[in-house]
Amino acid sequence: MSRRIGLVVTVIGLSLLCACPPPQEAVTLGPKEKDYATPLPPGMVALRKIDRSQWPDFSKGFYQRAHLEEAIRNSLDYLAKPSSQKYFPYSDISHDRAVASLERFLDILAEVQSPEQLMQAIDRDYECYQSVGYNGEGIVYYTGYYTPIFDGRKQRDGQFRYPLYSLPADLVKDEEGKTLGRRLADNSIRPYYKRREIESNPGLLSGLEIAWLKDPFEVYAVTVQGSAKLRLADGSLYELGYAANNGYDYSSIRDIMIQDGAISKSEASFQTMRKYFSEHPDQVAKYTAQNDRYVFFREAPGGPFGSINEPVLAFRSIATDKEIYPRACLAFLDTRLPRWMDGQVRELPFTSFTLDQDTGGAIRAAGRCDVYMGVGDQAEAIAGRTGAEGKLYYIFVKNFQPRANTAPAKPEQNPDSKKK
Image (cartoon, rainbow, N blue to C red; front, side, top):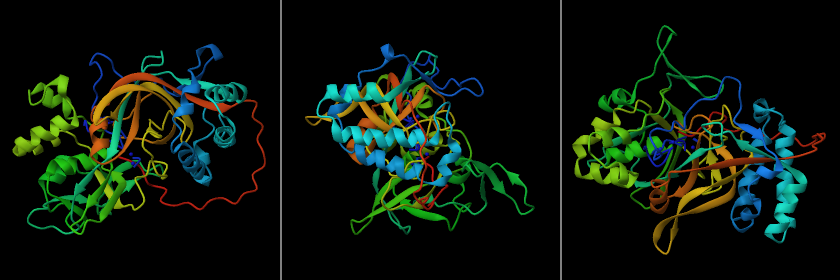
């Protein structure tokens, strides 16, 4: 939703990402001395095949199966599109093998009756690959992103004065959806406007306002998360999704606020940032202007959608760097995530199957992964508190023999959709 937005991103870092995240950008809560965004050497992918003795306990995924089949089918819908084939082979994983791995797992879910049977089936039919992590030793830093619900309007009024913008006609993207810049009258391309230019010059994108909010920090939150559901005056929800970004890297404002003493490092979260800005509304522009990245939106009913233009599901969809991770494939997370229990947010072990369906502006390199937490206030509360190391695995069928595909190709829709 290029989760987009790393909050990435944890929640807003605000962190990534969409996918349309995210990042999908996020709050980075990890130790400062660790650089989880350490890039891989050129040409290297993020996954390596591991020996059976190094496998995680996949049987733990037996108990957490809500929406798993739905998420798998969403990935299969993406892989049925002809455009998905250009991202394979990924290492030794062909497009057909990626599809077969998901189809076989659907069969397994329908067959197994216990955690032990699940582990046996995976042991029999699959090979396991592990992320190399930020340090080559498999350590991945997890953050969370979500879809906010804020009050909003389609027309400006005295209370709703802060705009979100639709895609500008002069913004130029390449075939992968990457922003190249702004096309000028002489057909040359220059860097697009930075956030500070857009927010300090209300007339710059006049006519492109797609929605209006009453809080400038909520506008920032939406541009970081890459999607939103806006509650209109009649109570209906106006759904917005990622359309593009202005081409700049995401920068977290969290660390700057900590350095300034605006918030404490030990309590840094989206909630503490929101509280600070509610008490110091004159400080919003000062801090948000230090993140050059800006996101544009489109109306997106039925979302939010990830960067593969399929719906993302809470705790079933993850955002990774799509230049080094395989799109739409089945992953297994082993980390700790905050969850709602008995009316409280508690950090608990999280070992579960997910689908790699999104990316984000703050989610870069092999050492970062963003988990989609859902929609609304509860999702906001846990996404803003997400920040833990863990391991990340992918599984693919072994002894794979390609089969002829006689099914008609699925028509493409919104190929440029990306989070954050």
